[in-house]
Amino acid sequence: MAYQVPQNKEAFLKLCNESGTSFPYSEDISCLSEKIKVGTKTVHNRIVYQAMEGCDGTLEGAPDELTRRRYLRFAKGGAGIIWFEATAVKPEGRANPRQMYLTKDTKGEFERILNDIKETCIKENGFEPVVIMQLTHSGRYSKPEGAPAPLIAYNNPIFEKDNPIDKSRIVTDDYLDSVGEALVKSAIMAESCGFDGADIKSCHRYLLSEILSAYERDGRYGGSFENRTRLLTTAVGEARTATNKDFIITSRLNVYDGFVYPYGFSVKPGEGITPDFTEAKQLCKNLVAKGIDMIDMTMGNPYFNPHVNRPFAKGTYEPPEHPMFGVARMLNGISEIAAEIKGTPVVSSGISFLGGVSANVCAGYIKEGKFDFAGYGRETLAYPDCAKDIYTGANLDPKKLCICCGKCTEIMRCKGGTPGCVIRDGEVYMPLYKKFVLGKE
Image (cartoon, rainbow, N blue to C red):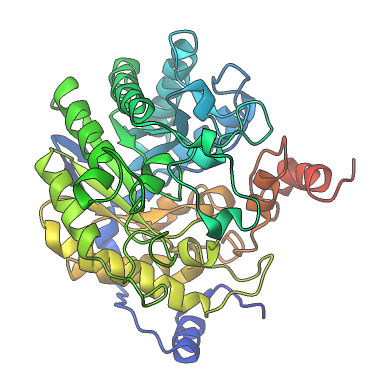
């Protein structure tokens, strides 16, 4: 069944009635234009452009032409925070041959694009955005040469089914130690480039995220809650110590996986995929104790259950739930966890399906103190100036909205594909969709 992203309040309320969901809603969205402190830095509005990987860097890992185009469009768009996409900390942990990779050889190109992002935003919007670098190890999704070369925390039959990954691909505790060290070194290098902060990425079943559900793994990184969270909390704490106090340390964090125990984080054992946020709450408290400045919360896995982390109007499979139910689980779950760490800013996720009322819903949550930032993902590819339209009080343009069709992700899943919005940015990305997805030159 196909749905339609709501363009106005009437359509939104109809979807709420269909799905049995309800959300805070505010006609006044001025709170999204408010300044807010993160650590010692002032962010000029409450809109975040989430990390959206383009798979379009150079083979060495530096930003390339399409990368620059994307981020300069984001800079003109006026978000308070621009979350720079997944950047590998080890060569074997790259998700594709063109994933960003910050090294001494590529550092100059990162400095150049960062300078251009900030200058463009200042020129177009009158303020300097906060730019966060996302640091990652792709784990079971590693494909540094283009072919799958997974590095896993444990074998998972949900993903591997009848073709288990060879146990030689299960990373050792010593290797995980080295990943933690690489994350800290990369955070230091990101600071030296001029980035405002670093994200120790732990979401969407990449390596640090997978470790959180390693209930049956032996050793220092498996079994107990302390062991499963050790890599993330240690990396955050050491990155905080190793960088200047004005440098933001954050994490894009999966607070719920949506897989049955013992293969999913934040689920009730023996109760299918029913959420249980007990461990997620304690983890967030522990991260705050380690000095984290902000947490960007998300759920699910874009490779396996994308209806959980980015509810869609039309996709490659029939979702087991109404997309509004997925949005509600995301926003209400984030709100429940955020209540445990009052004073630490929290970024929301999963709001693109709300379309033309996304700002109204996020404003409703923010006014009630549920979270602090509206985090836009796919919407930024379709509508890169949506932030400006929101904080200047203009209505979101229905002709620019993401329609949540999933075509950007379809391109990303194809070898060599560079994702973008096929519908709203068709001059650039429709030919790529035809080439990589449809096989037509």
